Image (cartoon, rainbow, N blue to C red):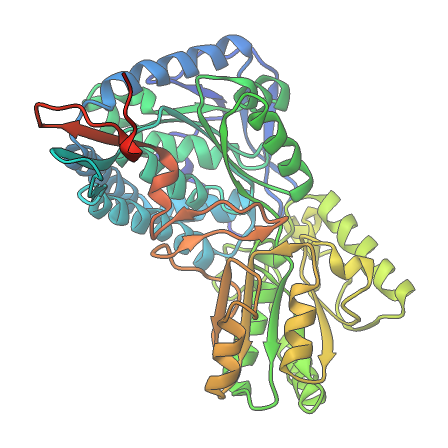
Length: 510
């Protein structure tokens, strides 16, 4: 395994790092947090975590920056975001390597995630000139009506380990062009990714006097996440994580009449009909189920395969899985890196035991692997394929690991029924050459997910579309389309340009 980590210094990562930034790096009062390489178990670096004092300093500075930033014209805000994107592009290689090192996804996926952040900045630049409102006809003579959008405030962004940079970009790039500030609380598993990305963009913001727009708080839940949920200075909290935690986040923020964007669990199904192009379907299934070691919210968890082609699909999947190389995520030949923690490995083993107990057949994989050399301490598993039934409790639950449940269906209606018969509703896909089947799947009576695809997999959403799901997935939307509206407040204006004062609905008063 390569031991070259010289890129860390290029990103400003030291042996011990501050866990709080509010326009400058703060001296933190909290305990040390170790960042561990999931491929080796070795300590990469340490972070001194923020305490209550640092949290307050970050939110206060972000709020002050917002009061000034909202007065900057939106196209000017977009130009600054453009420069932030350029700064990220200039560091694409080391940032991608850091993602692989700290999170464990393969290097191609690490670079791809950084590219996603760059693309999101570019999208936001264009959106900065398209924060469109509406004009409406008034029922009263000599009156005009319009709708406009204003900056919202300080946005709390709480991200998960699996996309340690992209999800921040989905939220922050839009928030910035909308006139908002951000306070970012990243996952404790990937603090260095957050520090590095902050180091890359902060010179752009600091040069404009707006460093605090990208405030960062790395700390324990009680000193970082929980205060964000209760802080009235944060009118919007974007949370990415499990459905169980998201339920608590939603109720807590709603209790103070705050808003939330929730990106929670997925239990995504890919339907393979008997007329599907299997040469297309198989790579989509393998990437969707094995990519990021099954640790995407859009990971393909269930394959609903028509009984006429089920044996052939299983045969092809087993052959494909046998060729998946597991190992060092920095190695360009690796297709599947480690799970994030030993607890994730144990959760996978528990799920497989539950599947066996329910009557499932493990067709391949599931073993915990101990690789040679420095990789011996890594959290490696062999991706598993399990013949299962959709109604089993373990199948209804999202296990964040590379387990693919293969479930046989009779026809399209049966497939749609099973696709929708889980608590989650994030991503779905159908492989068919029949236009009627495709349109049925995409209709109001088809997939109930926020994302529904035809002849492309469940994973790998483009930033141009709004990303998010329904049911226990949370219902929020990030990234493209009109997701920007979540980061602004709507205002309706009525202007009387006459010399009379007629009332709405024809009311006569006095």
